[in-house]
Image (cartoon, rainbow, N blue to C red):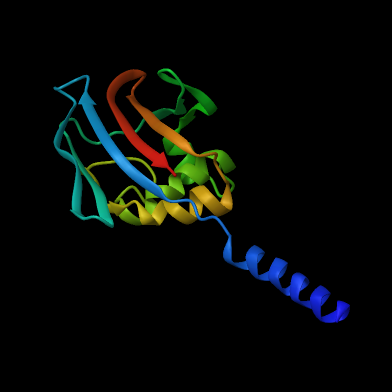
Length: 180
């Protein structure tokens, strides 16, 4: 009788561990795009679209007015909301032309670039002589990257990018997301 009871308790413990796995979900909450130099670049559109409860996507199109662009830097930072948005983990500046040309790019920059590279036309090196488009990037594409590859704690986050061409700030993008 004691063996059956021990077997039952052991199987109950295994089953509760199997069924209590916690899954995190990433969801876009807002998006801001601002052109600082309207003679250089204009946002044709910048929106977060909610198709239904489970499908949201981001689309951005930037019209570049002075092409070709041969010198681009990106300063990006990850912020977590704690009584306002505070710096969290990453805040770095990188030469985008060098990053896209390099066979061994910065691993942190590669991680963030992997978030949107499949949905963007920025898949080649400099010069950029066309408009920049991020087309229908869904939030579910980030679920695996933010919960399994590099797990983040739950909370509200902002990924802010300053787009710098020829050493002058030209545009700012802010992606707001929630990890629950």
